[in-house]
Length: 111
Image (cartoon, rainbow, N blue to C red; front, side):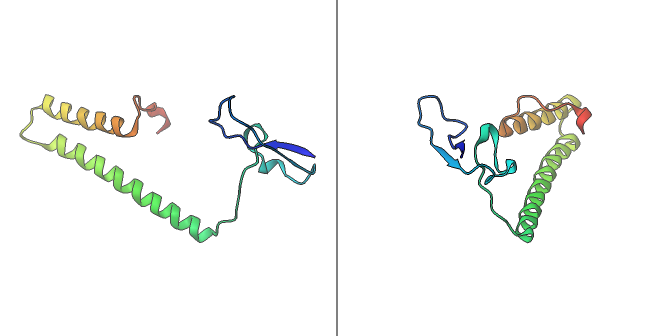
């Protein structure tokens, strides 16, 4: 028998841990996650995965378009001075960081 723990990642040492045993060879190494935990898996039809991926792509595209539109508006606002435009773009960037929880953006070399 091969013991597998199913304690969650976030559980501390004070919790209980359940161990389930399976005959050796009954579980492939692909079914095991970190620390030998069994991963649940099920077959999802390809068309469902494609639909979800398509919806996610549309959402990302809309979000990027929104941010780019705000930046463009800030840069082309004729009522602002050059410094005012720079400050407006900085405010948009700071809002993005606040909403996403990113204090620091990744290095541009990965783009």
